[in-house]
Image 1 (cartoon, rainbow, N blue to C red):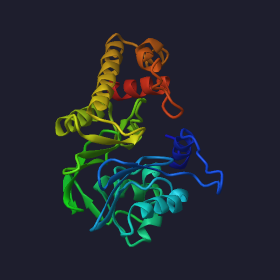
Image 2: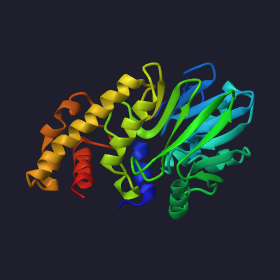
Image 3: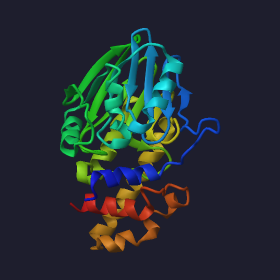
Image 4: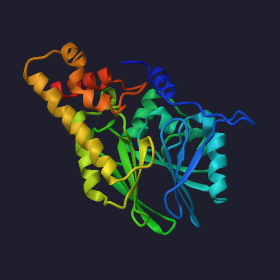
Length: 286
């Protein structure tokens, strides 16, 4: 297993750097999804924002060095304080800014396993102060936000947040738009758990739902269904190889398994087609 700092460095390298000519600062792009829900796209996991009279609910915090730009983007949306920060899981591209945001007197919320992983990895100073095992509700800015845990999907501490009135779903890393997902087997993730989580989320939403994926552009139910189709197709193909007695190396070198999606550009810097074949093999073989 690679050291966690190396893992996050590799993850970071997969995202293009966008600079502003005037001040050479990284640009945080703000994308409105409803009258008070926004997606912030920067470097690392997509951030969700609920802004209203009650204050700001922030979902994930990206990397610590980007916090000033992120705070600036949030202030352009709302002059209210950041009341809550919810982490969808423990990876550094989603929690790296936690300690900086906590200095705003923000309450951090996450699944029990997120707090445990952060303590084990000793990656941030400010830990979640409210944790849960299954689900909880946050009532803010005129709506119920359902926070739901999904077992052993991307990691062992994944949560999605569904903004019930706005009909917006933040999936965390249980969705990578138009690319292969990172399924962190070393942190309790699994192919079967990941697929099961996507299926459950699809039952929850409708054709009008706007989705904030962990990485990639804002999406909808059709996009998420296509993502599920890809996952299930790869599972069937890799299981067939396993049942035929193929080794991990044979599956890793069999480009026909992923060719359809490679041709669509699903392979990327962090998760290549070979790596996704290896991940499926390792998870399904056990």
